[in-house]
Amino acid sequence: MKLCREAFKAADDATSELVGTDSSRSFVRMGADGTPTSSIDQAAEDAIVEVLKANGRPMRILSEELGELVIGNSPEFSVVLDPLDGTYNASAGIPFYSISIAFASHDLSDLRFGYVSNLALKEEYYAEAGKGAYLNGKRIKPSLNSDLKNLCVSVYGYRQNVERTRKIYSNVRRVRLFGSVALELCYVASGRLDAFVDVRKALRVTDVAAGQLILEEAGGRVTDGHGNILRLPDNVTARVEMVASNGQVHKKILNLLSGG
Image (cartoon, rainbow, N blue to C red; front, top):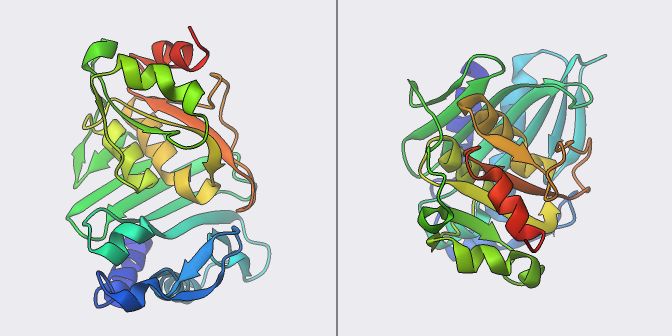
């Protein structure tokens, strides 16, 4: 937690003057994950990596922009980092963008700690495996909503996979798209959203690792788009799809995705 908070402060300090400016959007290079890196992305990542290096412990870092970086010899754990989740929001001055950090076993098979914090608002989500999930120090739980007609769901599939997601749009009450996957998963964990769906095969491990642990520790459920266990890829280029929910409506959403 101490290390995550140091990383958050470093990212905040590095990006605060860039938020909402034209210069924040300037193209720097193509990131290791295959998407463009903007100046605000680079500033956040550079600041956080310096904090992790200064910590002194051997670790393996997987991050959107740099790809993989090994610090020290024989690292015992991996850090899955999204230094700025919601780049467009940050660039446009929309207050919904976050830092996402997950600590895991070397091969990511075992998520141990997840931290997602909104850089624009005082919302700090975190979870340790087996010890529940928290928002600003208070334990959180997903909603108990089990009625499709009352659901508020985040659904990504408006360009690709339109047919697959069409029944969700027509069966739930509200759809919200906020543009920061890590925070949206945390919103499901805290009951602000009932479910999150992205079946575009576009999500990277850096997008979802921390949020997945936080949601599962809160009592929610996470699978791939067909209801199988979601196995996180051990690199930043592979893509996954995800259905995440309060657990009450998971099967119903999967059934809508399958055309039922």
